Image (cartoon, rainbow, N blue to C red; front, side):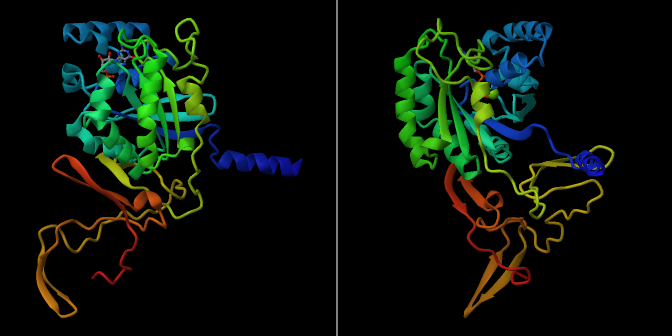
Length: 351
Ligand code: GTP
Ligand code: MG
C-alpha cells in the first residue's frame, strides 16, 4: 500500500504527458492547399464555430477570394488574406487518439522559403501537400516549383517522415480520378527515394482539404470507391518517430524571442529535459568577434588578411546532435548546398 502511494506521488511530480507531443509541418508549392487543410483540421476538431466560418466566407468574398475562407483560419494577417498566400508560419494545435499535434503551416511561395525553413526546422514530421488539379501538380513539381525544394529542405532539416497528401481530389479536373492519383504517386516516388525518403518513410493519401474529405474520417466509398487506405488523422496517428533523449544534455535552438513580463524564448527541445528553476546558458552570448571584424590570419607559412563574415553561431557535430549539425546554403533565392557538420574546433582552439 505504502509503495503504491509512493508511486502515485511520483507520477504527480514527473510530468508524463498522456499523449505524445508532435510537431507537423505542412509544406508544398504555393496554392497547394496547406492553409486550407490546416483550417479544415481546426474546424473538424471543433475549434472554429460556424459563425466564424460564415464571417470568413464573407470576408473572402469581399476580397474576391471566395474559395480561400478555410485558409483564412490559418492566414490571419491582412497581407496574407489580401494576396491569398501564407507569409509567416501559422501555428495551431489539435489532438488525435494518441497525439497532441502542433501544426506549422509553412508558406509555399518561393519568396518565403526562409520562413518555410524555420517552420520545418521545428517539425518532427511533415505533410507534403500536392495539388492534383490539372496543371498545378505539373507547375509545382515538374516545372521548377517548390515541391522538390521543400522535400530536399525538409529532409536536411531533420523531418524524417512525410505524409504526401494528394489534395484537391474534388476539383472538377480531377474528380477523384484513380488514374490521376496513381500518376502523381508514380512520378513522385523516384524523386522522394532519391531525396533520402525510403519507402517506409513516406505514405500517400488522397484528400480534399476544401471539403474536408478523407481528413478526420475515411472518404465515402460513393465518392472514392477505390481508396481503401487511412484518412489523414489515422495516418498522422500512426506515424512513428524516434523519441528524443530526455536524459541527454539540454539543447534548444531559439527560434524566436519576445519581451512579456521578462524575456520569453521559443524553440523546439532537441535533447534533454528542462524544469522550473533550472539555470540555462544562452549561447552565443560571449562572442568576441562580430561580422565585419578585420584581422590578419597566420596559418602555417601563409599570412592573409581576413574578415569575420558571420557572427559566432552555435552548432554541433552531426554525429553528436543530428538536428544541430545540418546546414543549408541558399543564395539568390535558391538552395545551392546542403551538408553536415563533420568536425568542430574544440573550445579554445578557435581563439
Ligand atoms: P500558400 O500558403 O500561399 O503556399 O498556399 P496554400 O498551400 O496554403 O494554399 P491555400 O490553402 O491558400 O489554397 C489555395 C487555393 O486552393 C484556394 O483557392 C483554396 O480554396 C484552393 N484549395 C485548397 N484545397 C482545395 C481542395 O481540396 N479542393 C479545391 N477544389 N480547392 C482547394
Ligand atoms: Mg498557406
